[in-house]
Image (cartoon, rainbow, N blue to C red):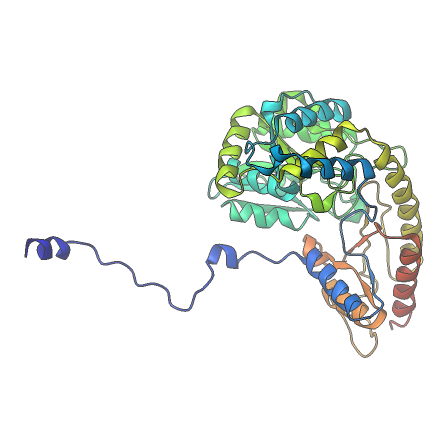
Length: 417
């Protein structure tokens, strides 16, 4: 009886919500439009349909042979068959610190490096470590599709700061100030940019960094495309330009774009030691260490120099100029010349709303579907990047495919009335 009396004082538990199989938090995550477009194009190709895909954000070059051979040797080494430190192999953290000093002039210790499962994981870890529920994050648009989702999953609130082709898709300090509030915790800064190819000058970076310093914001700066800049432009690392901000700055990078290693899934975040230690603790419960063989391959990449990216950059530069020329020649399309990365980001405003093969697409999303079905060309609509009316075309594909794909697009859009 005593047991029954005690039980009577237990507060009733809320009834489970029936029918909900996925949490609201995860259910609210938007699928990756870039991966979805690429998957649709590949599915059509697998069915024997000739599709030219401009959706994928990865180099079309193989990983350099010396890196692959390092991975083969690592597979045979039993030391790589076991768990390793969550934060990364000591040799890789040291190589990342050395590479960061060599390439951007930022001096960090290996203790400030956390090796992650690709750049996306570094971004997610950084937001999860820095943001509390309700913290606002200034996110210039167009943005890479993962940023707002990772911010929201960490409990943050993305505050979109619009840019357009009139400014080369570059945000100004005045725009950031206008969108900031007392709840602003962090600014996302990306140069070179995915999806626009914009590259900020040293002077512009200094102004934005000075504002962040003055307002006490953290900055997450994504430098994954650091070596892919063209036309005499230079990439500048924000904590190098504004060293006083280094204690409130997280740098995200990886081997994916520079060394054609997207599938190897090795990225990293660099930041103040306390932040990196906290992120490593988080990662210890998420994934533990990154694949040891991929880490060994990354060491070979970083210690082996930049010969591979020099070759790729020359090809991308040629394709950059060509796709810009071809897109601008299509009536109704305007296009800012990309300065970095490997994407063109044209405006489709002059085409939308016109009659095309019995349909009248009014959004870039609708137009992307028509173009995929009618011209067998895949691109990512601007809605995926917070920029309706635009589109992202990756030029990380063969020269012949680029010519053929933009040619098909031009032929189809010539029918728009």
